[in-house]
Image (tube, rainbow, N blue to C red; front, side):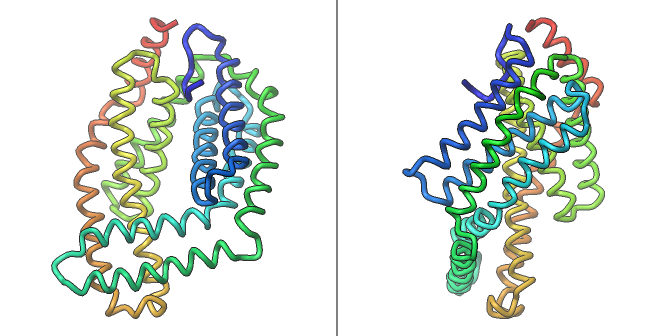
Length: 301
Protein backbone atom coordinates (compact mmCIF):
# COMPACT_ATOMS: atom_id res chain seq x y z
CA UNK A 1 0.00 0.00 0.00
CA UNK A 2 1.20 3.56 -0.69
CA UNK A 3 2.40 6.13 1.83
CA UNK A 4 -0.95 7.90 2.11
CA UNK A 5 -4.15 7.81 4.13
CA UNK A 6 -6.84 5.89 2.27
CA UNK A 7 -10.43 7.08 2.03
CA UNK A 8 -13.27 5.68 4.15
CA UNK A 9 -11.01 3.73 6.47
CA UNK A 10 -10.63 4.23 10.19
CA UNK A 11 -7.93 6.82 10.72
CA UNK A 12 -6.14 5.03 13.55
CA UNK A 13 -6.01 1.83 11.49
CA UNK A 14 -4.52 3.76 8.56
CA UNK A 15 -1.86 5.33 10.79
CA UNK A 16 -0.94 1.89 12.10
CA UNK A 17 -0.90 0.41 8.60
CA UNK A 18 1.41 3.14 7.26
CA UNK A 19 3.81 2.92 10.21
CA UNK A 20 4.05 -0.86 10.08
CA UNK A 21 4.52 -0.87 6.29
CA UNK A 22 7.41 1.59 6.47
CA UNK A 23 9.09 -0.43 9.21
CA UNK A 24 8.54 -3.71 7.36
CA UNK A 25 9.99 -2.24 4.17
CA UNK A 26 13.04 -0.97 6.05
CA UNK A 27 13.63 -4.46 7.46
CA UNK A 28 13.15 -6.02 4.01
CA UNK A 29 15.67 -3.58 2.53
CA UNK A 30 18.24 -4.55 5.15
CA UNK A 31 17.64 -8.20 4.26
CA UNK A 32 17.78 -7.59 0.48
CA UNK A 33 21.12 -8.99 -0.69
CA UNK A 34 20.75 -7.36 -4.13
CA UNK A 35 21.28 -3.89 -2.64
CA UNK A 36 24.74 -2.63 -1.83
CA UNK A 37 25.40 -1.05 1.57
CA UNK A 38 25.11 2.54 0.38
CA UNK A 39 21.82 1.94 -1.40
CA UNK A 40 20.44 0.11 1.63
CA UNK A 41 21.43 2.95 3.95
CA UNK A 42 19.85 5.49 1.61
CA UNK A 43 16.57 3.57 1.47
CA UNK A 44 16.21 2.82 5.17
CA UNK A 45 17.06 6.39 6.18
CA UNK A 46 14.21 7.55 3.94
CA UNK A 47 11.92 5.13 5.80
CA UNK A 48 12.92 6.76 9.09
CA UNK A 49 12.19 10.22 7.69
CA UNK A 50 8.75 9.07 6.59
CA UNK A 51 8.07 7.56 10.00
CA UNK A 52 9.12 10.74 11.78
CA UNK A 53 6.89 12.80 9.47
CA UNK A 54 4.00 10.46 10.27
CA UNK A 55 4.64 10.97 13.97
CA UNK A 56 4.54 14.75 13.49
CA UNK A 57 1.22 14.32 11.70
CA UNK A 58 -0.31 12.50 14.67
CA UNK A 59 1.46 14.51 17.38
CA UNK A 60 -1.71 16.36 18.43
CA UNK A 61 -4.15 13.44 18.01
CA UNK A 62 -1.76 11.29 20.02
CA UNK A 63 -2.03 13.77 22.90
CA UNK A 64 1.01 12.20 24.56
CA UNK A 65 4.20 14.21 24.24
CA UNK A 66 6.34 11.60 25.99
CA UNK A 67 5.34 8.91 23.48
CA UNK A 68 5.92 11.28 20.58
CA UNK A 69 9.39 12.21 21.82
CA UNK A 70 10.33 8.60 22.48
CA UNK A 71 9.27 7.31 19.07
CA UNK A 72 10.60 10.33 17.18
CA UNK A 73 13.97 10.02 18.92
CA UNK A 74 14.02 6.28 18.27
CA UNK A 75 13.82 6.68 14.50
CA UNK A 76 16.06 9.75 14.50
CA UNK A 77 18.81 7.90 16.36
CA UNK A 78 18.41 4.79 14.21
CA UNK A 79 19.01 6.86 11.07
CA UNK A 80 21.77 8.90 12.72
CA UNK A 81 23.80 5.75 13.39
CA UNK A 82 23.98 5.30 9.60
CA UNK A 83 24.45 8.94 8.64
CA UNK A 84 28.25 8.94 8.35
CA UNK A 85 28.11 6.32 5.61
CA UNK A 86 25.50 8.17 3.57
CA UNK A 87 26.93 11.67 4.14
CA UNK A 88 30.32 10.63 2.76
CA UNK A 89 28.66 9.28 -0.40
CA UNK A 90 26.55 12.43 -0.85
CA UNK A 91 29.66 14.62 -0.74
CA UNK A 92 31.17 12.61 -3.60
CA UNK A 93 27.94 12.95 -5.62
CA UNK A 94 27.91 16.71 -4.95
CA UNK A 95 31.51 16.97 -6.12
CA UNK A 96 30.62 15.03 -9.28
CA UNK A 97 27.77 17.45 -10.02
CA UNK A 98 30.16 20.38 -9.73
CA UNK A 99 32.71 18.63 -11.95
CA UNK A 100 30.11 18.57 -14.71
CA UNK A 101 30.34 22.38 -14.78
CA UNK A 102 34.03 23.12 -14.18
CA UNK A 103 33.76 26.87 -14.82
CA UNK A 104 36.04 29.05 -16.90
CA UNK A 105 39.39 27.67 -15.76
CA UNK A 106 40.58 24.48 -17.43
CA UNK A 107 42.53 23.43 -14.34
CA UNK A 108 39.34 23.25 -12.25
CA UNK A 109 38.79 19.66 -13.31
CA UNK A 110 42.24 18.67 -12.05
CA UNK A 111 41.43 20.21 -8.66
CA UNK A 112 38.05 18.46 -8.56
CA UNK A 113 39.56 15.09 -9.38
CA UNK A 114 42.07 15.50 -6.55
CA UNK A 115 39.32 16.49 -4.12
CA UNK A 116 37.14 13.60 -5.24
CA UNK A 117 39.94 11.14 -4.50
CA UNK A 118 40.25 12.58 -0.99
CA UNK A 119 36.49 12.33 -0.46
CA UNK A 120 36.52 8.72 -1.65
CA UNK A 121 39.26 7.93 0.85
CA UNK A 122 37.15 9.49 3.61
CA UNK A 123 34.19 7.36 2.57
CA UNK A 124 36.30 4.21 2.57
CA UNK A 125 37.62 5.11 6.03
CA UNK A 126 34.06 5.31 7.33
CA UNK A 127 33.23 1.95 5.74
CA UNK A 128 36.35 0.42 7.29
CA UNK A 129 35.80 1.82 10.78
CA UNK A 130 35.54 -0.33 13.90
CA UNK A 131 31.82 -0.85 13.33
CA UNK A 132 31.29 -2.07 9.77
CA UNK A 133 28.28 -1.04 7.63
CA UNK A 134 26.93 -4.58 7.90
CA UNK A 135 27.08 -4.48 11.71
CA UNK A 136 25.36 -1.10 11.79
CA UNK A 137 22.58 -2.37 9.58
CA UNK A 138 22.09 -5.40 11.82
CA UNK A 139 21.73 -3.05 14.80
CA UNK A 140 19.35 -0.87 12.78
CA UNK A 141 17.21 -3.89 11.94
CA UNK A 142 16.90 -4.79 15.61
CA UNK A 143 15.77 -1.25 16.41
CA UNK A 144 13.09 -1.49 13.73
CA UNK A 145 11.82 -4.77 15.18
CA UNK A 146 11.51 -3.14 18.60
CA UNK A 147 9.73 -0.12 17.17
CA UNK A 148 7.24 -2.26 15.28
CA UNK A 149 6.17 -4.01 18.45
CA UNK A 150 5.10 -0.64 19.88
CA UNK A 151 3.16 0.72 16.89
CA UNK A 152 -0.24 -0.73 17.79
CA UNK A 153 -0.14 0.81 21.27
CA UNK A 154 0.36 4.40 20.09
CA UNK A 155 -1.42 4.27 16.72
CA UNK A 156 -4.77 3.30 18.27
CA UNK A 157 -4.87 6.72 19.98
CA UNK A 158 -4.69 8.76 16.77
CA UNK A 159 -8.30 8.64 15.54
CA UNK A 160 -8.95 12.41 15.63
CA UNK A 161 -8.97 14.00 12.17
CA UNK A 162 -9.40 17.56 13.43
CA UNK A 163 -6.35 17.29 15.67
CA UNK A 164 -4.44 15.65 12.83
CA UNK A 165 -5.14 18.61 10.54
CA UNK A 166 -4.05 20.99 13.29
CA UNK A 167 -0.75 19.11 13.27
CA UNK A 168 -0.47 19.76 9.52
CA UNK A 169 -1.19 23.42 10.16
CA UNK A 170 1.46 23.58 12.90
CA UNK A 171 4.10 21.96 10.68
CA UNK A 172 3.23 24.31 7.82
CA UNK A 173 3.53 27.27 10.21
CA UNK A 174 7.05 26.17 11.12
CA UNK A 175 7.92 25.93 7.44
CA UNK A 176 6.66 29.43 6.79
CA UNK A 177 8.56 30.84 9.77
CA UNK A 178 11.81 29.19 8.73
CA UNK A 179 11.42 30.61 5.22
CA UNK A 180 10.99 34.11 6.62
CA UNK A 181 13.97 33.55 8.91
CA UNK A 182 16.06 32.54 5.90
CA UNK A 183 14.96 35.75 4.19
CA UNK A 184 16.37 37.77 7.07
CA UNK A 185 19.53 35.71 7.47
CA UNK A 186 20.62 33.72 4.41
CA UNK A 187 22.99 31.47 6.37
CA UNK A 188 23.44 27.79 5.65
CA UNK A 189 21.87 26.98 9.03
CA UNK A 190 18.71 28.97 8.28
CA UNK A 191 18.34 27.37 4.88
CA UNK A 192 18.86 23.92 6.37
CA UNK A 193 16.01 24.52 8.83
CA UNK A 194 13.80 25.73 6.01
CA UNK A 195 14.67 22.62 4.03
CA UNK A 196 13.77 20.27 6.93
CA UNK A 197 10.41 21.92 7.54
CA UNK A 198 9.67 21.91 3.81
CA UNK A 199 10.35 18.18 3.73
CA UNK A 200 7.94 17.72 6.64
CA UNK A 201 5.24 19.54 4.70
CA UNK A 202 5.99 17.46 1.60
CA UNK A 203 5.52 14.23 3.56
CA UNK A 204 2.23 15.53 4.96
CA UNK A 205 1.05 16.44 1.46
CA UNK A 206 1.93 12.87 0.44
CA UNK A 207 -0.06 11.42 3.32
CA UNK A 208 -3.08 13.60 2.48
CA UNK A 209 -2.74 13.42 -1.31
CA UNK A 210 -6.20 11.86 -1.78
CA UNK A 211 -8.06 14.75 -0.14
CA UNK A 212 -8.58 16.39 -3.51
CA UNK A 213 -6.98 15.04 -6.69
CA UNK A 214 -5.44 16.70 -8.62
CA UNK A 215 -4.99 19.70 -6.30
CA UNK A 216 -3.06 17.92 -3.56
CA UNK A 217 -0.76 16.01 -5.97
CA UNK A 218 0.07 19.31 -7.67
CA UNK A 219 0.92 20.90 -4.34
CA UNK A 220 3.02 17.91 -3.36
CA UNK A 221 4.94 18.16 -6.64
CA UNK A 222 5.79 21.85 -6.12
CA UNK A 223 6.78 21.31 -2.49
CA UNK A 224 9.02 18.46 -3.67
CA UNK A 225 10.71 20.81 -6.16
CA UNK A 226 11.36 23.32 -3.40
CA UNK A 227 12.75 20.65 -1.07
CA UNK A 228 15.07 19.43 -3.84
CA UNK A 229 16.44 22.92 -4.47
CA UNK A 230 17.03 23.47 -0.77
CA UNK A 231 18.53 20.00 -0.44
CA UNK A 232 21.02 20.58 -3.24
CA UNK A 233 22.00 23.85 -1.62
CA UNK A 234 22.52 22.11 1.72
CA UNK A 235 24.72 19.45 0.13
CA UNK A 236 26.89 22.20 -1.36
CA UNK A 237 27.15 23.89 2.03
CA UNK A 238 28.26 20.67 3.69
CA UNK A 239 30.87 20.08 0.99
CA UNK A 240 32.16 23.63 1.39
CA UNK A 241 32.38 23.24 5.17
CA UNK A 242 34.29 19.96 4.77
CA UNK A 243 36.79 21.53 2.39
CA UNK A 244 37.41 24.64 4.50
CA UNK A 245 37.48 22.71 7.76
CA UNK A 246 40.21 20.41 6.47
CA UNK A 247 41.84 22.71 3.90
CA UNK A 248 45.34 21.26 4.35
CA UNK A 249 44.12 17.78 3.47
CA UNK A 250 42.62 19.11 0.24
CA UNK A 251 45.62 21.10 -1.00
CA UNK A 252 45.41 24.28 1.04
CA UNK A 253 43.14 27.29 1.09
CA UNK A 254 44.58 28.95 -2.02
CA UNK A 255 44.07 25.79 -4.03
CA UNK A 256 40.47 25.57 -2.85
CA UNK A 257 39.48 29.17 -3.49
CA UNK A 258 38.24 28.71 -7.09
CA UNK A 259 36.20 25.68 -6.10
CA UNK A 260 34.75 27.37 -3.02
CA UNK A 261 33.76 30.31 -5.21
CA UNK A 262 32.01 27.93 -7.58
CA UNK A 263 30.18 26.30 -4.67
CA UNK A 264 28.95 29.69 -3.49
CA UNK A 265 27.91 30.68 -7.00
CA UNK A 266 25.90 27.48 -7.42
CA UNK A 267 24.29 27.93 -3.99
CA UNK A 268 23.21 31.43 -4.99
CA UNK A 269 21.69 30.11 -8.22
CA UNK A 270 19.68 27.56 -6.25
CA UNK A 271 18.51 30.20 -3.79
CA UNK A 272 17.31 32.43 -6.62
CA UNK A 273 15.18 29.54 -7.86
CA UNK A 274 13.95 28.64 -4.36
CA UNK A 275 12.70 32.10 -3.35
CA UNK A 276 9.80 32.53 -5.79
CA UNK A 277 8.76 28.90 -5.44
CA UNK A 278 8.92 29.07 -1.64
CA UNK A 279 6.87 32.27 -1.65
CA UNK A 280 4.12 30.44 -3.52
CA UNK A 281 4.28 27.24 -1.45
CA UNK A 282 4.07 29.18 1.81
CA UNK A 283 1.82 31.98 0.55
CA UNK A 284 -1.19 31.18 2.73
CA UNK A 285 -1.45 32.01 6.37
CA UNK A 286 -1.38 28.79 8.42
CA UNK A 287 -4.95 29.23 9.67
CA UNK A 288 -6.19 29.68 6.10
CA UNK A 289 -4.47 26.49 4.99
CA UNK A 290 -5.87 24.64 7.99
CA UNK A 291 -9.39 25.85 7.24
CA UNK A 292 -9.09 24.80 3.60
CA UNK A 293 -7.79 21.32 4.47
CA UNK A 294 -10.64 20.83 6.94
CA UNK A 295 -13.15 21.60 4.18
CA UNK A 296 -11.36 19.16 1.89
CA UNK A 297 -11.46 16.50 4.60
CA UNK A 298 -15.18 17.02 5.29
CA UNK A 299 -16.07 16.54 1.62
CA UNK A 300 -13.59 13.66 1.30
CA UNK A 301 -15.20 11.76 4.18
